[in-house]
Length: 66
Image (cartoon, rainbow, N blue to C red; front, side, top):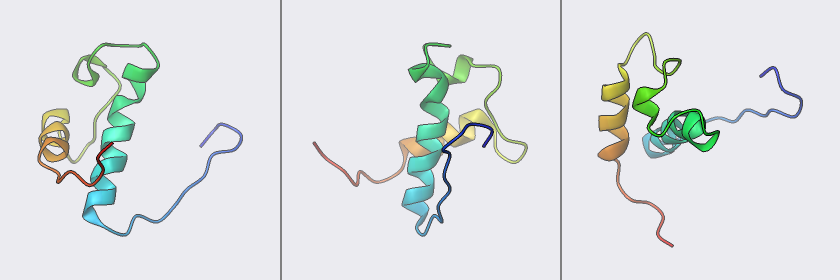
């Protein structure tokens, strides 16, 4: 939120929430800061462990196919 042009939105479904969690966890990987988000020191939550978050996104239903 410190960057110009950020935006927010309301998440309406659990699946959408998990998609956003996956996107956030993958940010340091896309930025080249690590190869796996589990290795990045500054990711996580005070409520859920990184392992819990990865388990949740791994179990989400596939909603998009190329």
